[in-house]
Length: 167
Image 1 (cartoon, helix red, strand yellow):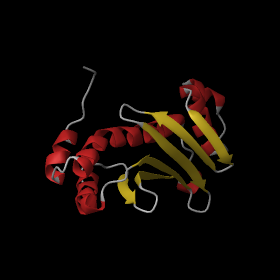
Image 2 (cartoon, one colour):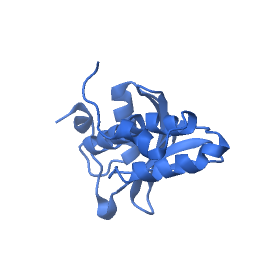
Image 3 (cartoon, rainbow, N blue to C red):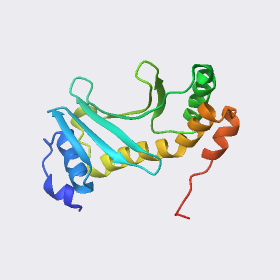
Image 4 (spheres, rainbow, N blue to C red):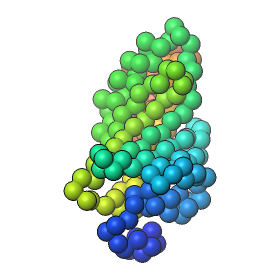
């Protein structure tokens, strides 16, 4: 049993309390924005990602949104949006979208906890890790399409296989 699981042994645990404990464990900067929402910054290889996790009692869903700034030239928007669609075909646990008004690339995922299910620390760690992994994996492709004038298919070759280890 992990330290986070030891701290929470009740079935009445609020999911955002668990997220806060995970953030503290990893020493991530975070801001508890209310009972049902937390925002944090997680350092990646390419950049710092902004993550927000919010609990919806009505939907019984823990929502994760991971964002990073992306402001491509207007002429490259069709290629970027095609790249987003192609990237989404390669992922299973979430999806990218581009919020043009905010100039943000967004990774979204919702963990359904209907019927009184409780998210465990392992699930929450996995949600966050999957978001960062997807952002890190596809960030270079989004950049190549936006600024390098690569085709979406060519840019995605960078993200085909996940790298293991460090050079």
